[in-house]
Image (cartoon, rainbow, N blue to C red):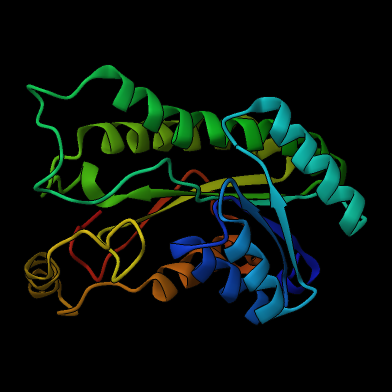
Length: 253
């Protein structure tokens, strides 16, 4: 299915990386359901900026019933089942190496918060989308991950553990849903210049990472967004269960 024929749900689609993904999708002719939890003003600003191909809808993706209502409302307003999902929403988090808790002091609620946001949120959207995807014989799920499993240059224990669990779910879900024409993939970035989450990162860290990449620069949200579009496009129709690292070549495989 062409991007221009799709309505794509982007969780956390109103700000930061999510907004970059929203803009990239609209640029290619797709419609975007911009899910937000608290960023109502930003979501409606994107609607004003990008036009009627943006549909802002509020839901806390960790709430299973709220996600079910989100899909019902999206289908009612677009006239079609939602068969493309980008699980981008991030539980409240700041990439601040100096402020992160160490393994000696981190408490379980931090892990639970990240697991709820990354893993439970993605599971909720997958389950809510599955029936509509099966009815069309087509589905595209893209989960947003991180390169920190391969390169824990800053050990954000809670965030990285949750994203590692999401990679596992990506691969098991790809196996389960593949016979129904549904692909499930992950796009993993490193530090992005710049999002709300990376705003607390010191400039010298950006410079250090840039100098460690073959491209000698830090990946932008816009560059990351283009990789997400690949997995939603017809060119990726035979690709599933994969984790594509988009970080300027910093991490190999």
